[in-house]
Length: 315
Image 1 (tube, rainbow, N blue to C red):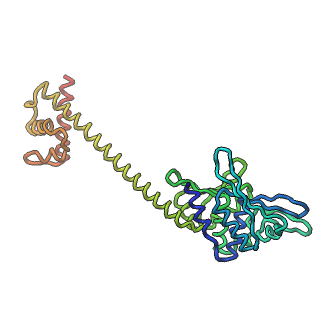
Image 2 (image 1 turned 90 degrees about the vertical axis):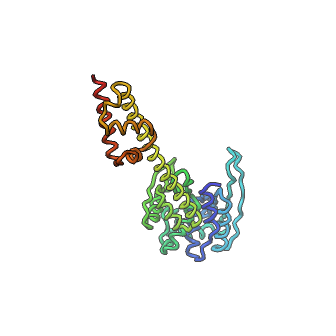
Image 3 (image 1 turned 45 degrees about the horizontal axis):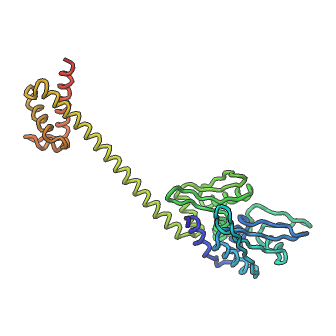
């Protein structure tokens, strides 16, 4: 099961205690995943579609709580590419669909006519708790969150520019910075920063998903830190080995041409020790001398040996 499905299953089990929040969440669910079918003069059928069984059960429960109706749930198997089942809920005009849509702010009546509205009804999100409920419904109806092991991305997909703009404004009212992009005729409100996705999961009360995401973020950070340290140490080790090989090459060249006895005593001493202890660090070489010297002193002598080798090569 994907991370997004797990998050939706967690949210679908939550039913708001306050009626105002129930209305806000159901309105968002219908706005994101519902379609209207004209069934006659001022008669509408409302069809809600979802691929998540838990979301379908929640929609069924909200309709029963708010409007005292039992919605029929139908299952359609998708035979193409072995995709998930689709759960369809149909609220017919005989169930007072007109009044339900007006109550949820989806239809508005003007004198003797009506119009479908695409903005988020202000009367449904007056309270902070209702704003959170609306975002929760929007996520359940048309949202998704990527597997945090791969990338950080959370989005809401809606087919209305007006609704996407209101949704973006609602998300950003919680001090987030969502953006909108058009994709295949739809409008996508999205967040891409891990911290902001964590905040949004907290806002919609997906606490288990939040903890799972945070655990993955900590693990990824630790893994990145370890890789960075290992890469740094590997680079340093490679640099040390290459320097050691160059030093040994210089010393052997001097030995095989003029002989190490032609070197000053301090240079001859470090050259002989370097040939014996080829894997030792500069600090370890310095401690083997009598009297001992520091790392910078050893490095200075080895540079002098390199200068001698370069002079011989030019003769």
